[in-house]
Amino acid sequence: MQPAIQLRGVTKRFLTPSGGIYTALHDLDLTVAPGEFCAVVGPTGCGKSTTLALISGLEPPSEGEVEVFGKPVDGIAQGIGYVFQADAVFPWKTVLENVAAGPRYLGRTGKQARERARDWISRVGLAGFEDRYPYQLSGGMRKRVALAQSLINEPRILLMDEPFSALDVQTRSLMENELLGLWSSSAASVVFVTHDLEEAISLSDRVYVITAGPGTVKSSYQVDLPRPRNVAEIRFQPRFAEIYEEIWNDLRDEVLVSYERQKRSGAA
Amino acid sequence: MAATTGPAVRPVTDLAAKRARDARRRRWTVNVLRVLFAVVWLGSWELTTRLGWVDKFFFSQPSEIVLRLWVWITEGTALGPLWEQVLVTMEETVLGFILGSVLGILVGVALGRIRLLSDVLSPYIKAANSIPRVVLGALFAISLGLDLRSKVATAAILVFFVVFFNAFQGVREVDRNLVANARILGADNRRLTTEILIPSALSWILASLHTSFGLALVGAVVGELFGATAGVGELIYSAEHLFDAAGVFAGMLLLAAIALIAEYLITALENRLIRWRPPVATETRI
Image 1: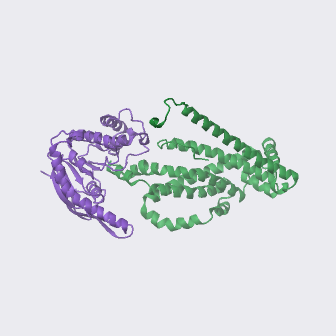
Image 2 (image 1 turned 135 degrees about the horizontal axis):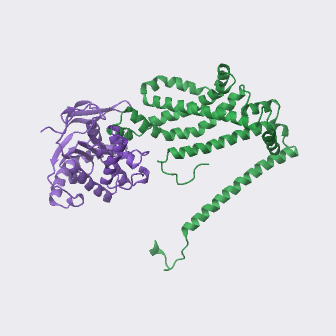
Image 3 (image 1 turned 30 degrees about the horizontal axis):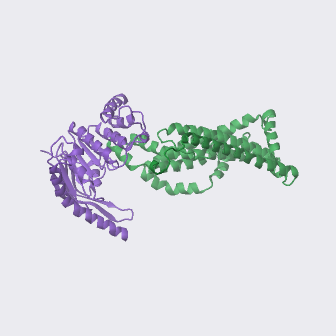
């Protein structure tokens, strides 16, 4: 079977403003199967977000190959959804206009786009808020808008960059459950970047652990918890604790390395 | 909080009503002080010139200025009816303002979008910005003649640079996440410009319109000083030639009135165009 996403020997370097070279990713290999929910965990600054930028085509790799459904990524391809860490809904558009933006950009008429948008707005539980501007919504509601905005284009690949990290704990587990519900009725592959191991295990089929930067894959784990899952309760299962302990042993070292580095650069 | 107070019954006051009362009282105080300021300022001006402590010939006096305005309104000015002079200056200002703003936004957005263009042109723009541009009024008076066009051009060139820099900056400072999001959603370059970059730059541009309308007025009046047959600037200029200080002040008063009306209109436009921004909770504007 052809993988949905394949990264082979990918290295990404950035030019820093002072003229130096910063290596974000080094020789990274990663594979995501069609329909797979895959989580990427690692300490802060290990290049997790860069991985998503490469898959989406927002950034080209410095070395190595990035393939989506067997085709090398060259610029932004269609069929990809991206939920950003920061708020990326358009503040000057209403909820309806925000969600309708995708279909309109892809050539649908305004009327068709708005009809589809209404459907998606009710699917993420925002019916009645169509005419609000983002500043009139709570953080959780803005995330729902962002989800609807991405999912309305029916992406085959959904990239999520710590989408829920700014939400409070209760809203967060609600949103996680809702995401799983929406995902299960689609055929999309998901790459979900997070620094929260609990979140990674409760959502995904597979967890990749990335090393402290420059990031490369340290290990990958199959999560064999049954679906459908209830994110709020799954963490009480003994199997969850076993998996958590196993992955945490790997992740801990990387977190410590990253922490030591931050301390040192802070002291210097 | 409640647990720390001793007695079980606490006198309850309606705090919302108290706040509203305080706010009303404060607004009232501000208004009274404003009027008081005008009275003290104009009163001392009138008094010192009447007593001869300050020379009325150079500084005129409020009663004379009001009288001059009244005469202008009822009997017309040396150049013709007053409303005609005001209309001429308004026309020059508004046309210059529109022309300068449109060009400023177009060029600002273009340079903000096209890196090469802005890199090539930046030293020239910096140089052009550093010269005092009102002197261009003299050039326009020569090349475009003494009619409307030279004033519009002078006003437009002053407006252009302010709006241009703000539009340019606004496009450059756009949130990269929003651009990335739009591109992922499938926006092409045209859509990116019209739906993301321009709306995002709009708050910068609108902020610049407040200052630039004042500059358009400066341009129109300066243009009239370089040579004209009508307009408030020309009115001031001819009053100056007659050593008529009251006439100069009366002209200034007219210009202030024009600027205030325009400021009000621009604020209304701003509120319509950026409805999506959260309303500011406290009054910060003067």
